[in-house]
Image 1 (cartoon, rainbow, N blue to C red):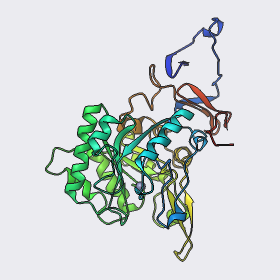
Image 2 (image 1 turned 135 degrees about the horizontal axis):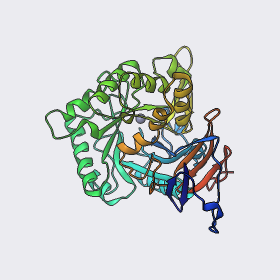
Image 3 (image 1 turned 60 degrees about the vertical axis):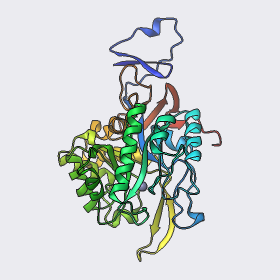
Image 4 (image 1 turned 120 degrees about the horizontal axis):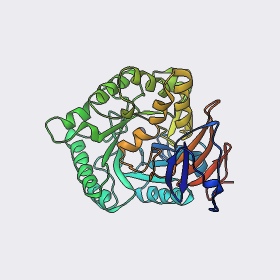
Length: 373
Ligand code: ZN
């Protein structure tokens, strides 16, 4: 197929244009040795930094534009994390606007780990209705020692507020849920839905590959119609101590019969990753990397025999659908021109386009963030 981009949009998609012979100012890009796929949607990024669990010096730095674009990410959803005191929703919104100006598409969730949630306008509903960039709430934390130990009633109120805010603003009103390593796993979500008008599918739990028990609970959740998310940032220590590698988790979930549209990957980029030695002592901190998003999708194809289309769905169409981003994650006329060209030979990223503008060419960033050298 040939694909025509005009402005920010995909204008046409058909076999054989003869536009090269016209006198329109058209740039023609030969992609004959490539796969053309949608730009990646990273549904969970701490793009103003996160962490801080080891004191002030363990607060992680902000993400830079090319951290995302070199990894094929053209849409990023920013969230707060454990710390909603020194990290704020105003700062999150400002960074989202900065990244948008620099070249990619950004959205945010209002709220925080803790419930009652932090908000800008006073309520979750108001934030969703009145602030364009807010598309959901979260990540709220459950089954984690860092959570506010929310009651089931508190979780219900968050979901109900997000639902109404979503309906009135035409957004998904999704509740992003950080799930820790606590024994209650996903039980709080099942309990929140029971006996109410809430639906399981409004909750979008992440870190489901944290350990085998949570992975199994995640499969049950997905079989009931929910969308589950696997985290691609990791450390060797985590992988040696029970974490299911995200690529393996994706492969196993597909083998278990979960539809590809119910499975997503996210980077958890710029979160802090504690590093332990063999004795289990904390010896340092690493920063989650957004570029792991595509690394894992590629690994799923090359190492775990996941079909390329399913691996790509987990970082494009599936997250776009659960987040209600109607112009993202698919290649079709009138969709945003967020595109990635992969080299067919080794599935590496060659070119990246966001909103019709080329940001990466031959694997190199040709557009950089304001303060990047
Ligand atoms: Zn989290």
